[in-house]
Length: 286
Ligand code: AMP
Image (tube, rainbow, N blue to C red):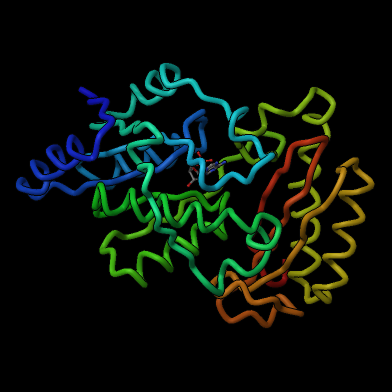
């Protein structure tokens, strides 16, 4: 039986009860419009935890003025139905005023990891994400919280903040779920026109080809420039970034085969008016 709750008090009642029984609690934070990517996190949480909570909250603080906050797809009934097969104990769907009171004045900012890629392209973004995720972790105090590698930079930022703020939840990263043609699932894929949807898999195809080249030791800047040209030729309107970076520190690297902790290729590019992001591990020698 899944409980639908909207307040912190209700969450605390449920989690206190579970904790008294020494049950392991998993949290999957989402902005709704659930797809197989989200559901893969829910399945992983259900396999590893005794009780699973899914939060659904379109966080206004991570959208800048002029971004798609109002247009962002919302369908609570459909989301509840999508979660039904997975034995979720609690769906937390707070109103914006529950998360941010009128007098709310705190912002969580993570340094370092946020100073590249999406942190540069969307300067408001990680502060908004870090603030809401910190609140969700403190409200729910899960043993484990599940995040997708689809938003890899975000995953690292959340790991950092949990560590720095002594939040004792384990932050679990989960692999990217893709369509059969390689396009990473995203709630924003719904914005793509038929023609754009046809072009969109070129993002993953280009990343895959670029990762292969970087894996053989080719100069990273050359590979990035090649991938940028490829995406433009395929019909992407703009490329925010194509970056090869250390998979743990996000430091820029010049040769992927030298990265101690592994290298990763990251991209953000706009098709029509839709900004798509994706990333891929670089296997040395591939
Ligand atoms: P969102 O609703 O877009 O904020 O995403 C909620 C969580 O689902 C985040 O941790 C995302 O990284 C994760 N997620 C979104 N799309 C995918 C995907 N295609 N594969 C795996 N995880 C995903």
